[in-house]
Length: 489
Image 1 (tube, helix red, strand yellow):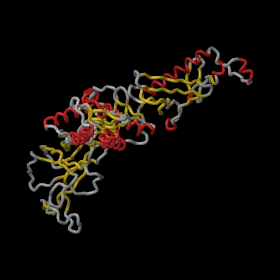
Image 2 (image 1 turned 45 degrees about the vertical axis):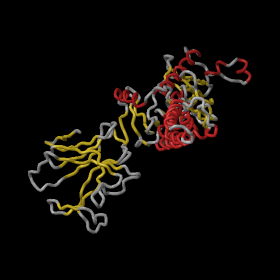
Image 3 (image 1 turned 30 degrees about the vertical axis):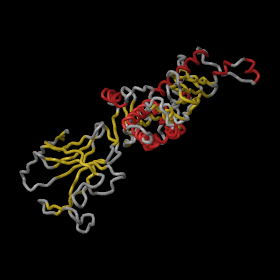
Image 4 (image 1 turned 120 degrees about the vertical axis):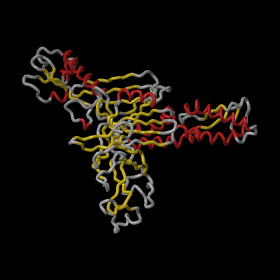
């Protein structure tokens, strides 16, 4: 994929196909021109009979006809015999050359199959090219892409893999998503700081200065912030100050003039965060980035994202509906389609457990201990991880671990049985085996997220965790009368 024309497409959406039927090789190229998106050129690949991993976009200009004058194979597949009595048609394009040109170079024509015209061969071959192009365009199984939702408060990036296209679209997350609180609001905050430093130098009543701030913020958020693309020289911001001028502050006739490099500083931190967020999700074989969200409408952010990633063979698609709300629209579609069938855990999950106390183990020394009914002293606060961070889980699958509790009474009351589930969201893999510190407090990076309560009739149970949907599900499983029982949350 490459950009074939400068600038963004400003016309209506359209698809353009280019077909080359050569004497020995043929190919199809296409472009999808979307308003506000770069103008890129793609070649059709994955032709039948050719290895997909080589990314071949050309196919042999060959057709195989059976005895009934019907085409049975095309391209690379036609070189492999399918049934007896077939005729291989090659170099049929030469039949279009003028006779004097063929005579000049002593070109001998291969005879066409009896009952098959040149017009029919071209019609059959073009039908084949169109059919595969449509399939290639519509059925991109295993295509991987990143969605960056650059909103007002956060920038969320998630990578997906297309599992199935039909009868329903099915997507699977490929790794844990990234969420950073550095969205478009942070651009407003940076501008507010600058505007405040300017307005504070004006000799006017406080209520007048507050009005200048309100009007200036409103004009920046509604106009300048959206119009700025990083290429303009300067922008003027209406402070609602009438025709007043403060030349030493850059204010003329009630408008504050700011050069482009100053405005760029307001964006820098948020834009860098968005780029970093996308990079965390990207892999070499990812082909597309979808940039959505309120801050995703920023022309400057779009330009930087395209500049960063399109040169690496990745297309960037942006919304062309300024009134769109990604989460609201997406929640309706998700409710109807539920297309995401697998998600990656954002953090590790597990429970607290105890183990026999080992006085020779330095990690055990100084930690709280208990003596259970079996008479064994045990150390408290170990971390028992059930599922690791970044684990891709199918919506219908669960990760299970078996546990056992000891009771000092054969008639233990299990009507209020409770298990606490914790998460670990440290900056790296949890190398520590301790959920609690030596003082009995939850260690850094851990957090209690839920409690599972059940009325158990047996002391052997499993803690199960599902994360295939939009939220975590934790539940207990146990065996009762040779059947697995589940307590749903």
